[in-house]
Length: 180
Length: 183
Image (cartoon, rainbow over all chains, first blue to last red; front, side, top):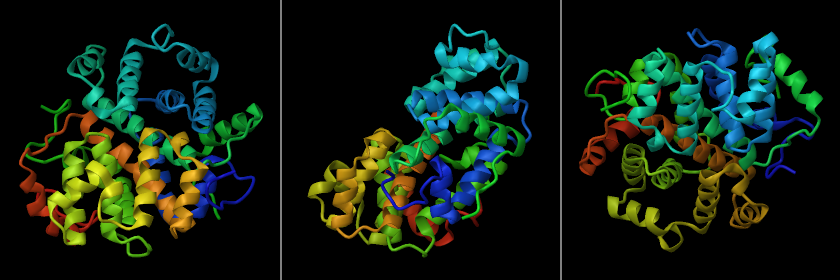
């Protein structure tokens, strides 16, 4: 049961933004601009970073829903998502995305864990300043979203089908705040 | 030196804000709503103190100093009082309710699942409402983002703590959404 009185049967962050729509608005806007706005990283790649950070934060709701969105967006290459979650370094994802995921993993631990050599590696594989910036902010934002969702013990469905449906909606419509 | 090329002379989060205004907008709106909007039963000083404490746990020099200075401005106390809260809030001169909320914030800093029903019950017994508990968790979570954003890009932070104290009144007055990024 959630720590505060939220609507029963509404999962994860959706229940929290229905409880407090004022803060929900900038939170959804942030997710939309970071994960769907104009970028040289594809929405699939950005969802993968979100799923990877959520996995490292052990947030089942965010990990499952963003992994599902990433699978939808990767289409025929969807096995990349599960390969990265199983073992990022051994996965077949491109060297640039691997270097960005490495930075995201450092941010997940703490900001100061990102070192010059992590940035240099990303640059070696042609990551731009903007891509490095967005990777750090996506990882930082999910360090917030994961804590928000779990810190209030919001409902995390067990049924994988529930996430497949969520992932499809997130892939099709992006981040649209639910109406209370 | 910062990890990416920022405009020179902008301290802390202001570098990334100027670099990427599209993301700065929702980030600033979130800060304004959580920390400064008057539609809250927690005072601005109490909310800034929660942000300061989480920033100190995350070892973020820029955030703990600017938000500590703003908290000091609202609470009309000096920097040593803020330092005492950071060092041991349980023995500091703040309300029992705020202590119970700082316990929740500290748990959020470690990880969302570290918040227990016992902590939440304790806050309720000290008079905290659902909305105050919600906002405490979200403030703590948001600072786990802001701190990582500021340090993860190795932004510049002035070392002199008085730099922050001297700017607190202006920051409190102008708020988080409508300000000159260069001032």
